[in-house]
Image 1 (cartoon, helix red, strand yellow):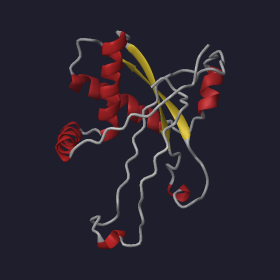
Image 2 (cartoon, one colour; image 1 turned 30 degrees about the vertical axis):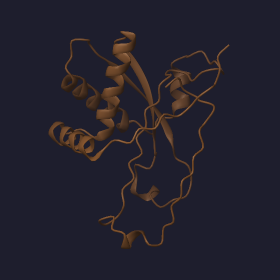
Image 3 (cartoon, rainbow, N blue to C red; image 1 turned 120 degrees about the vertical axis):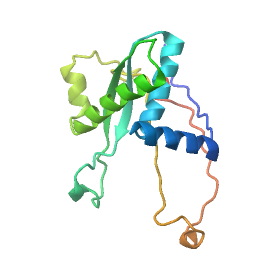
Length: 170
């Protein structure tokens, strides 16, 4: 029987890693998310040997300017299918992931549930249909320069809740 036991592993990357990732993003014309997804795909390939990988990601669903200030949940799930070869360099994988991701974002309004229905995927309440790995990147930026004066009205304290359940294998 499948269990939903889960946990969180946090890793804070230093400024040096951030600069390397930003340089890679700039030189390849990709986003940090695309680099992260490529790294996850490379890791999954190395662990499993599978050349056909499907990962999920959540999108905000606010791709029209009129939706930016509205209240409500517009989140949709995208299934990102990467078919790779073990001989590929990371740059080749990143290029493929960039193309796949941009194509998926063009169709982000297509409801995930409808996709599952049309693919005739057998529903199983113990797991997610289509993919078992979810990749997300929360990109939070401060307006302005992020100075201390800008943050005077914000109070921040530690808040740790370690989940004990998981919807995805990874």
